[in-house]
Length: 398
Image (cartoon, rainbow, N blue to C red; front, side):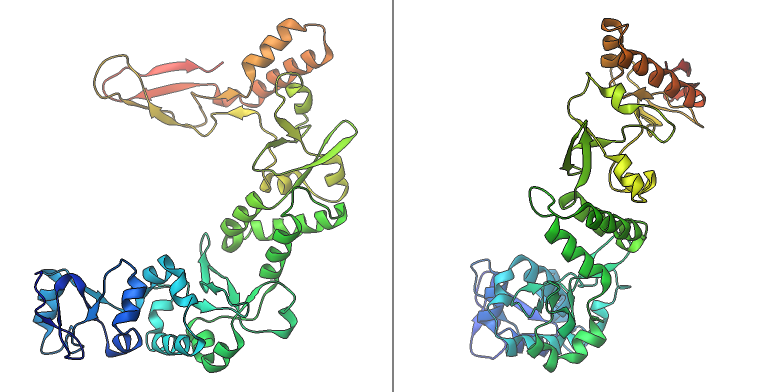
């Protein structure tokens, strides 16, 4: 329907279906007059509200159904505003505080859309103005919960570099922030994260090793908590360093941008000597310094340091290439057997051993390979089950 035959909300004219929107409640239409809803949608069209008497339960419910279903006119509910706010940040940035108060008062009438138990919640809508003037979402999604991005005003936290709700907005909309969003005063976790990001943001870590060790103790505590693990692991990827050493030279390396290994595995394998001469892009953690400070193998593993040289140990199925045309069957293994098990840099290590047979590190490489095979005996032999009528095979990995 391209003709301007649909009456607009205030009765002053008509619009066409492509430029019409329907408000799920009078309050939305009053808060977003046609110029503001057009600015918010931001697709270069000028939108007009249809009469607010069009409701899902009123006498014109069939008309509403016709307009929304057949004419595809959007019905905008309070929760639908989230996508527009998140796609068009400048809209709320350009609104005065008093207008935001009206928005928050509207949201107070529909608290369920901010409930974590509501799978369609809008806890990540960028709607909160902070004391610094930024617009942020009240929460961010972590692995199994939502973590706050902004906190209630607190004099103690003014220097903590966490985001606080704008004091004027909090004063006028206390119920929204406390009872609907359930925001709290800044907590230890957020203080720690902001401090961590600041201190590790540069091209190097300039703090003391003692401060670094204390950071690791706190990091490990939160990384072992499922509520914080996913969020914090992303932060560690972007903003953390591990102290590494090569001979007398110590340096800081980001654990997820480079490969960092223990110089010696927990079972005693001399990994630094195994990789010597065959891999120049591997760094080795200064484990003696960490161990002296009470940092254990498991702590550093949580931060991305590795001590296993086995590869393929997680692969238990895949596509089996028969060499025949058509769909290929899948293979699988059961139990401890790992058909695709391998040792990292094995070919390079064997070549090094053959070329430096009398070298001490060649002997160590041989010992590491042999001990690795011993440690994985139960994973080396088994049956590969293949679908599609292809015969199963019994396979010796190495």
